[in-house]
Image 1 (cartoon, helix red, strand yellow):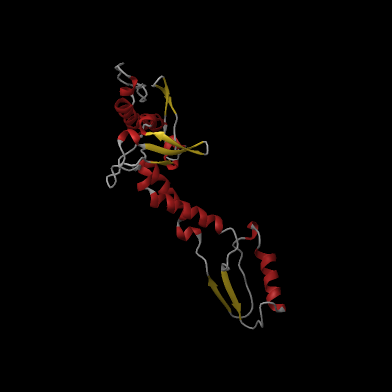
Image 2 (spheres, helix red, strand yellow):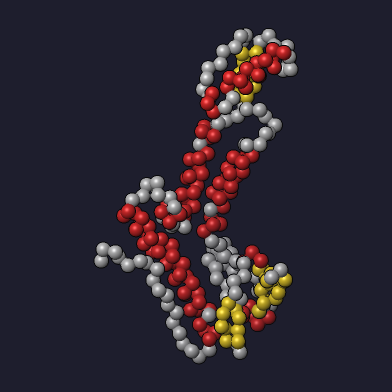
Length: 237
């Protein structure tokens, strides 16, 4: 949203697109307005005072546009659901992790069953008692109801989703702090790759859009927008 002084743009304020309604195309151009929530108040902003930056949606070229995150919807949702599943697993749900049946016990609250549970707690509860052998009298039937996190490979799944999203935005792993397979050369190259593959295309998009939409509003003053290149200088050179 442009801020004008004497009709000349002197600045602009960002408005979240999720809080904005696009102008209707069935009204004359000079009457079109954006409806935006600014400071909790709905305002009608003339379309001439709005610079709408967007990546065009091929299925709706006159709409809001679409970004890379839209294509990543399934991956982002999957990672979110895995995180919720892991969080919920630490709360008791309707199913116990396993069911054990010992022949000869008359009930779950019988003296024999209580003694068996007490022996389990005494002999096997705690990290220092993990992996101890259990011996008991009577025929035992055991059924496991849950699936371990290791079998579901949730850690590997979340790592794959993280890498997939990062690669979609062309961000090297070192930039987000992943140095598990890095060295000095890759650390320095990561900055160049980020600048060339991620930052530079975005800056060029902004430059061309501002050149097309903003500069003509400055009146007769011709200007060509430019920016300082984000690619760091070659250290060896």
